[in-house]
Length: 420
Ligand code: RNT
Ligand code: ZN
Image (cartoon, rainbow, N blue to C red):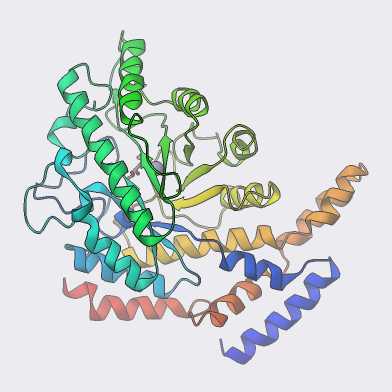
């Protein structure tokens, strides 16, 4: 596509959108101010940089062995930089605690400090990224039996409480240095494979651990915690301590935002419909957008119906500044940089479509009981030329528009990742 073609299609799109009262320029301005939090763990299949064997545990699984995964911090950063080059706008990078810059030393989870993340902060400053953070309560000997913050052994609980408090301090430091609130996510794998007769006890343990964790008060301007529920994990099928009800209760009571991961509910349960409820009771929401196929498989996010619905719910609720959009998937079976770019572009396209919705007209129809008219306009909106608007937005930001980025990624594979 030449710039001339992009411009031509864009001009036509602007004219077409004007006929339904939509201001395209405003939508572009909005999408450009919408950071997406890019998870660092797609680049290396959730391995991290600790001096251990690096086996992924905790009921999550990256499948596939496509060549070229990032093996070091430098490679991982280079891959993220490459992905960012193909994504318009300024974004965030979401780092897990076991991706610290430990300089070849064995630093246990209860010993990590902001200094182990200083090089990440420097990199972010240089590249104009903001950072988000996550405690890592899996892939560790002390989580081997599938329990961490809810463990019956108080010493193991204390270990993980210490880890999470340290992570909160690291997140605070990231936010302070980068001048942008760092979202710190807490997800634990805790659960059991088979029937347990101690559900209440495990949950009471988790509650007590969280109370201890949140005793340390952080500066809201620099960091905000969020807590992520789940329905089940591999090998932990019968019981999950941190269920949706558990964290909903804990979060609402203690004023801590919930993380909604789109793969963490029953197969036909969708998170898009949860947004408007949560917004009435919680100031902020964190999203982990993923695509689960038959289970929490963490496939690459694509432009599907639920992704569009999530975007619509955020935009229709006028909550762009209250809902943090993060991605969470790890597909090891395809080009990993391509996986990043497809997922972020799809998310942006969904948001752009939502921003280009003729919402005033739709709401007018609805208020008048004109339900056929509402349905018809929603249908028309689906095939309006939002793709031309997205291409124009890419070009405007100096980013390759349309399918041409495929060849660009192939080139990077040839030059860089295939040599690993
Ligand atoms: C696991 C959760 C969690 C992880 C990351 C790596 O089911 O979704 O968010 O994917 O923390
Ligand atoms: Zn998640």
